[in-house]
Image (tube, rainbow, N blue to C red; front, side, top):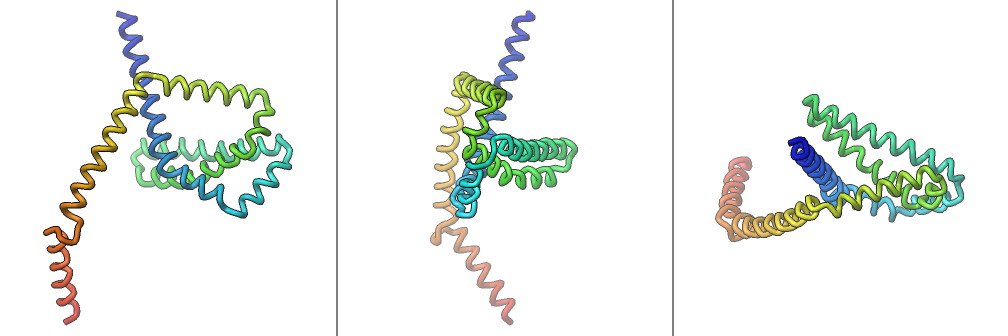
Length: 191
């Protein structure tokens, strides 16, 4: 009985970790942060900063990275507290506003990774984190969830195409009615 409860708890914990990872990886990183990161990476002014960061002492780089990471994580935790306390809109605004800082922090990590890895404890923690991510991605729950999400994405795209074809083309009855209503309102306002 105890083993069964332990297995159910572990499965639930794995599912929770998978859901959290997928939310961050698929929605937040791929949808929002990655485009910001790529925009940051392409800015000419930041290319100058990138060159200067290559000449900075590793301890200074670690300090800058750590401060930015603490700010990002503190904002995320506080946004979560706001969500839980019922201030959903404020929590959402805070969380969304931290994403550009997180993308900038990731950019700093990527361009100074060799300097940060000079600290053995940092390298150790980073490797352990990457091992945890790899373990999560090899997990059956993760693999099945990703497969289901791919199917869901395809269905959503197909349904949107049907919706778009039915309601958002110039020849659809819906658009025709909206245009007719617009003309009536415009004619009324022009009188």
